[in-house]
Length: 201
Image (cartoon, rainbow, N blue to C red; front, side):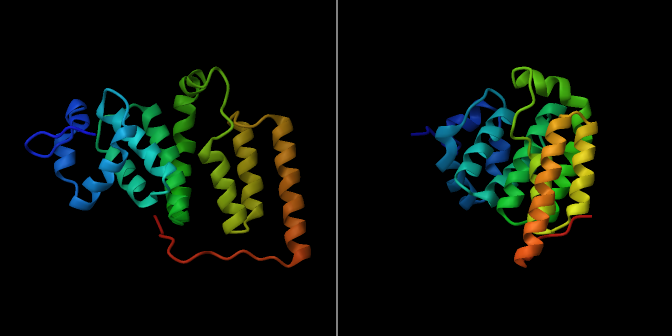
């Protein structure tokens, strides 16, 4: 169980120097945070928040994860850390059905990736990971939510030029989209845009 000082600040929060941040949380968010403190890791405020973000996403607590990601931007961070926070934010926005915001987060990482690609690949054992949200989830939104296959094809070409897809992967993914599009047309299946999405300029 987390130890607290006289001001009610958990020891894990004090260790990483986030007392001011904690004091600014609502009572409800302090309770939410307490649920995830056993998952807290890292020796810095950024590492701490990133571990709590992961825990809240695993718990499908998307609104809390979004708040934590936004708070993380107020801390000093490297470009790689900003990229990783954006990757989690994409998952959180999609879970909250905020698809325009998720696309904006994807676009931010498209811009960031060229500057952090070498370090990111090193972090993953010298290879690109299978789960790359700004690549995979953007296509998911374009196809599954917006039925915008033309833009999805264009984005696959963009990812190929960025080195995010091999030539074989590009062909396979385009073929998969073609089959999906034909199947949807034959079956008369139409997706709809859930209510509650927010617009972001």
